[in-house]
Each structure stands twice: as structure tokens, then as C-alpha cells.
Image (tube, rainbow, N blue to C red; front, top):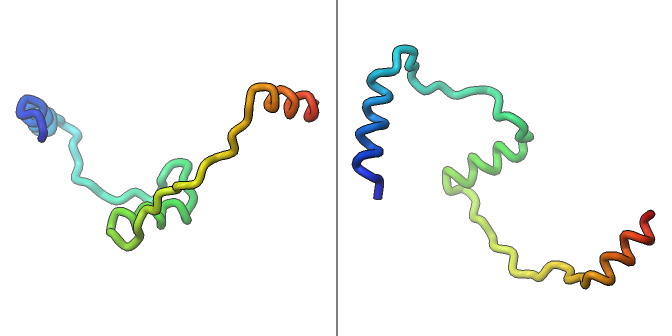
Length: 73
């Protein structure tokens, strides 16, 4: 649910903003690659499904991490 007070505040902000312009699609998406942009568009449109990763990562003890750092130095 949206907070009714927040809805009123946002409505007032959009009405009182002098330089408000209608939405237009921008060509640049910051630091995303074109592949990432296409994946996001497909997810939003429902063309792709998100698959959860169920595997476990590599578990490393503190002693093993120290040994790995020492070997790389």
C-alpha cells in the first residue's frame, strides 16, 4: 500500500514543479552494457524468468584465507 500522505505530497510536487517535462526515453543507461539493458527490459516485460541460484559458494576458513593471501604476495 502507498501511504496516502506520500501520494498527496508527490502529487503536489509534480503540480508545482515549473520545469516538469513529460517522460521520454533516454538513450544512455549509465554504466550498464547493452546486454544488461536488454536483460532488464526482458525481465520487466516478462520475457525472461529469474532463476534462483541454489548452490553453495566456496566456504573458506580464516586460516585458509590467510594462507591464500600469503601465497599471492
